[in-house]
Length: 117
Image (cartoon, rainbow, N blue to C red; front, side, top):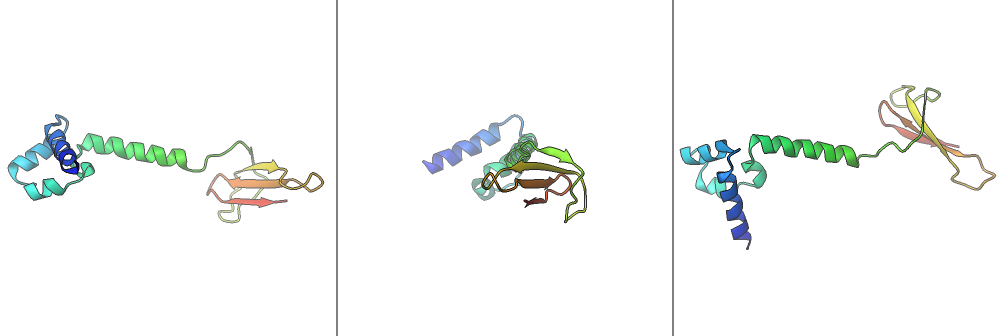
């Protein structure tokens, strides 16, 4: 079954109207039969498809990075890493009610995070 899937992938990429470079390189002999047999889908993709995949990858990385969850922007705190004052803070009651609230601070400049009570 793996053989058929790989063969279908090669045929599909060679027939792709948006990928004339691959077809031309195979016909001219710039890409050997052994090489086309071992190429991955990413290697055979057209320049347009490579750009789309790269953009999707970057977008996915951006979406999965830690997002800012609310908070209040302030310049009251100084970052120990970059010494910037552009910060966002959130206060949360993490211990018992008679204890002070814990303040979580995020430096918007470098991404450094710290907390204090």
